[in-house]
Image 1 (cartoon, one colour):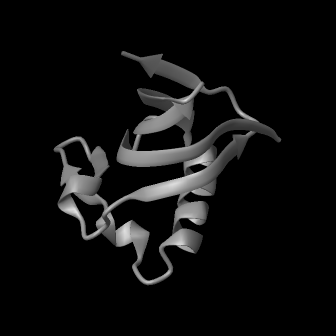
Image 2 (spheres, one colour):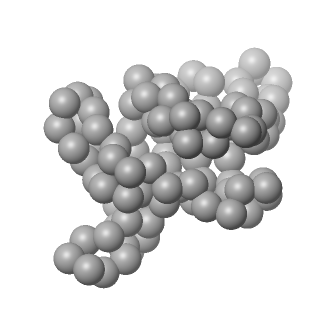
Length: 106
């Protein structure tokens, strides 16, 4: 496994039931500067990420923090926004993975 980021602060997560890509909005440190990014990960990486979050936030069920929107064609849109939860922050010490990761920075 390769290390993608250290000390990743999760802001939002969004994905659709029929799409393998997951959008993850976060902030992280690069060369002593905080950078806001959108990461595009796959469902496997999301499962690993949720496992890490569950370990960190043992008091709460992280899956219950996701909201859902249902559409006529049986598509389900899942989204998490830390602003609409009881979490103050969720910081993942290290995000590792084997799949391709795309980063979009502003």
